[in-house]
Figure 1: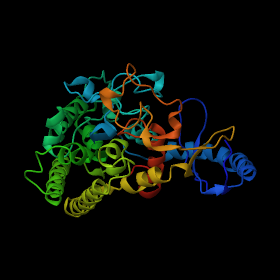
Figure 2: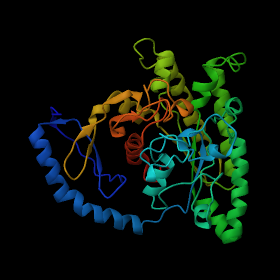
Figure 3: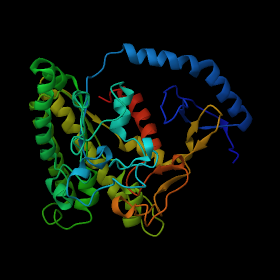
Figure 4: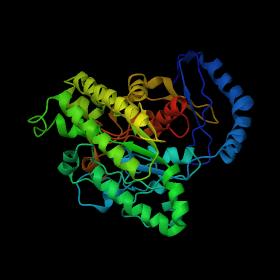
Length: 399
């Protein structure tokens, strides 16, 4: 399909894709077709090819964290929910459609999830495994795991509603994990790993989308501002407990534009399925309070590096302007996202977890054209672009 373009802006960040191709995500503004193709080819031959070797060399020589350790919800759950009794599972097709071996590992996407991409970017390993239900090697343990559980939130009730692993339970698993690491490498090395690892906390979306808005339980107790303050205080308590357990480099990832998720468009966006402003305003207020609290903790907890990470702004831009995010490979194919209001699975309007399955639903042919995999979770490609934007702002370790 021809693309009418006037000029193009290229970004030098390399994004590894599956297979043997070297692929690059390009943020397109517009360029004449012939000029765009010629410029893309020239740019690759002159700049990208030699820079590829430089990038690999830089990755080999730059010091980095020894491990990536993850807490949170389905965005970063690589399969912990496989090992527990909960309805929030995805260890069956078509999940994992574009994962290695087309395997449904329990990751809530078609391929890699953010924790995998960050660990790979840092040169630690390609995948961050689930702590539960996985045959973990010594190397798996000392380089980091994920304790995240789909359906979890800062609010304990959020986890209870779907029998997910709560944040406090995830912290208990972390304490157990530390003892296993200590048994492998000894006290001194274990203390080093605990202190110098990067910790990611990715949750809060389900508190609003699954607990406060659709159920009456918390609305009996709190108005929206009060509930958000309660949620942020729960987050603060968790961060402090994690700090006192030895963590120092902690990235607290904010919630996305909830009102623009395909499922929430269906539930609250009316017949035209617009982004719901109430849900987005709630997300922005939660993020604002979470950012302030992260700054406060960073200034009060000695030798800590606690950073709030804004996921809302870059993801909203991808959702609202999908066509400007293009993909270019060695044969100069240029394809922007074509769909950001629906997921790839089924109708893309409501299917998620159990309703996204190979028995009753179909999937799109080309997931690279979709921002969302199901009605709630982005595709691997969208995550890669999001990580690129976060890396530009916060650095490779997103901390």
